[in-house]
Image 1 (cartoon, rainbow, N blue to C red):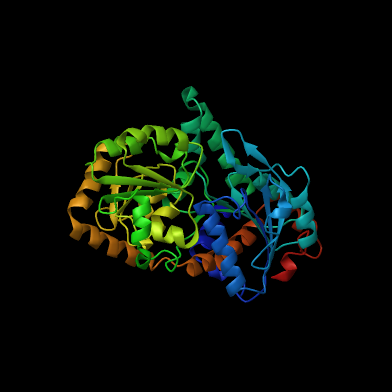
Image 2: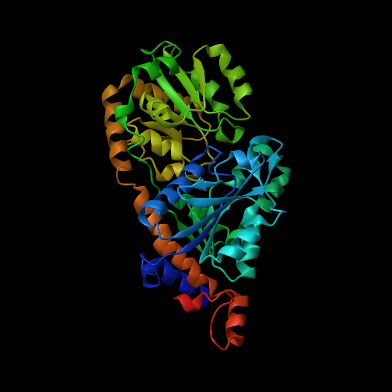
Length: 437
């Protein structure tokens, strides 16, 4: 009861316990897979965090621990002035684009032992979070864990059902990491927060959404890019998907949607992934789909802004960064009513939320936007206005100045921390943490 009451108090009044936001912090980020080589919305969020710390808190001492399989000498060693420490990684057999690590070289341990950070922030799911949890207890350092990929959906996609046993096992793992090991968990949408709480994980807070509204903007609409994306048919209605081309994204639905759309509707898929070859084969009979491969920088900005509608059939999104980027680009979205997408789209106002896996409903909504230009423009404008209120600065300030403080307070509730404090004459933690308050 005491623990639950204190967490509720901290959730409602986090600034009571926060340090002055000008006080320098030593932060160690455990990020897996690498946000510098693996393209995803998760990578965008951590890059935005590093940008914020570099610009708003240059006095903070930040170390990054991540992993890669390739020769790390050819990878960035410093990002915005923050050193990057690589651990030896391995690839998943069914997803070779992703690198994970058991950190058998103990690189993370050596980094923390030398750095002695005020806070460890680890990404989840993954394996490095286990190293982070062990090290946080070895050195009595608060541990905040952020959750970015919804594993239960992946289990349903890739593993046989077996009476729900694999998904049950995954939830036990999630509960152990986020309820037992983490001092506080942050998730990227209220929907995932609610699901965690339903599974008995109560110390969960929402990391506010943000999007770069300068990089993604309607002004980047480009005729040349539209010609490329429509395979030379720029006058046709253009539906776009951007992201990993993987089974868990629900992309098997795209061929079914395209079959239900008129001949002058075209689809452009931007990205790559293990499902690409099969998806190309399934879309080949329509003769109206074009794959650009991955795009970055200004080319990606142009691709978003040059579409008429963005489609997102995935039900596994903890947030859905590409949806945010489409909305910021002034393009309405038709997306599954599932996961974090529900937190982004106001159904019927800034886009459409449809029944998951219902190809007919997707096609009907796309046709509605195709035939009603006024509705499409109205949705685009409202979507853009919504994104202008979701700044990265406000999101990262909440993380650094509030949630890191909550983790630091919750660390004192660990049983081993209480035991140490009971027998410590000076009342300090094992790394001198409390003396710095």
